[in-house]
Image (cartoon, rainbow, N blue to C red; front, side, top):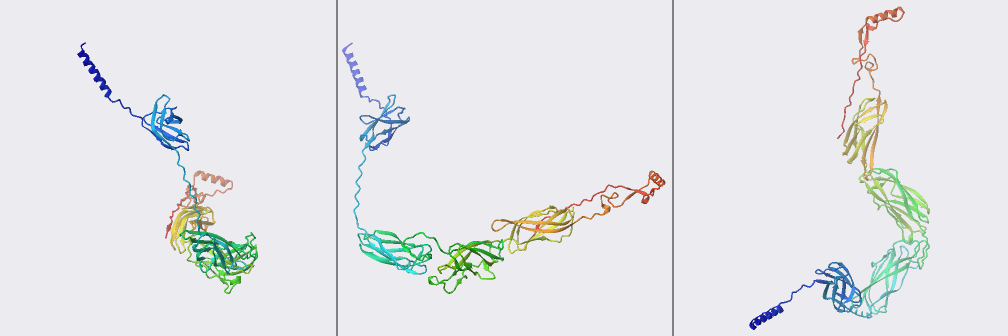
Length: 577
């Protein structure tokens, strides 16, 4: 081989080698993986989730973290997801995650996890003391010598002091009590400003709204509101306990000690009317049972129907004017015969009495339930006038007023014969009556066309029903008519009427009697000429001295099969007017 040819081969080899060196190496795509969360703190153990769509995790895969490839606990969730636990106190920094499957396949996630040290909490600044106003009750009292008494005004005096470190501005005091009534100012007192260390007296005029039985004290709620020099508002609430005049023991006690209740108390324990159903325009007697539930007698008891009161003067002494009973409501029920005020006398403790009142229901009263106030006014054992008020309820109905009868005279009825009963229902009331089914029954025989729906009847309107009665025996027969309806309180009721009719035996002409052997349709006997044999028989009878006379007319009757006349009932239908 010539040197020239060797040179050409060397050149070509060198070119091929250089061409191969300059060609780029093939690029393989890295798996796409995510770590959640990718930033954790090392003061606690953290669970991270590794997800990869281009790499398959198999059971037994191990996870290594950091440059030193620290192994951590891991668990495969599925082919693309696994969980790993970064233990507490792990080295802070940015770490690479390495996952190796049992088949030695591996995936690296460069700088995939950051472990941080938790920040040090800042020290809470110590609250600096400040000077604020602070109002409080220093003392309180009343000018009631024997305690608070019903009907007597008194004044509550409260000493309010500023125990704070600054001046209190815009001081306002509000009083409130369920058993006391604030007088003159509505229970609001203003005091302007109170310097620190100073105190002021606040007065509030009050009066009791009830008697105190078995009580030693009553309470007053006092609310104090004010501002400091920066405009910050403050509010404080205080409960003040005040001594009362016990109507049982007539003493004032410093503390509330449970005691037995000693007083009179009248209660309406029962009531009824002499009329079962009250209707407009109806007079009735109301009867009430009154019990003294207390352990002291009630003196000079007065019953006021409809509500009222008994006036009294100061200190519990009954004043002039006596009893007021004209303020009650009498639009639906009004007294009849006597007024609504009745004296009942004394009622001893644990005893009862019965009181009555004659009343009338107003003709314009609509159906419904009406409350009625009953006031029992009396004097207790302490000379105090007491009014015990009760409420009872009376029900007013508007029942249909109908008349049931015959719209034409009914004569005697015949046994075993269909007889017409012309029934009629008339609305005698002033209002429309809504009625249900009308039913006719009788134990005397069979009733046909015995039921019909009545419906609405205007005042003066009527409804007719023609009934057929076939009685079985003679005598007086009762016919029961029942009309069903629903009252104003949705209660099923009925109107009944029993009517009596006379039934006689049906008279039959003997010639028409089917038991007569000579009965025929015409009522006459048909005679037949005498035969030769009949003549021989009569001759023989004559030889023996027996009756041998020929039949009247010289012939024998012909037996005709009887025929019973058929009587057909005529149906009748109901109607309204």
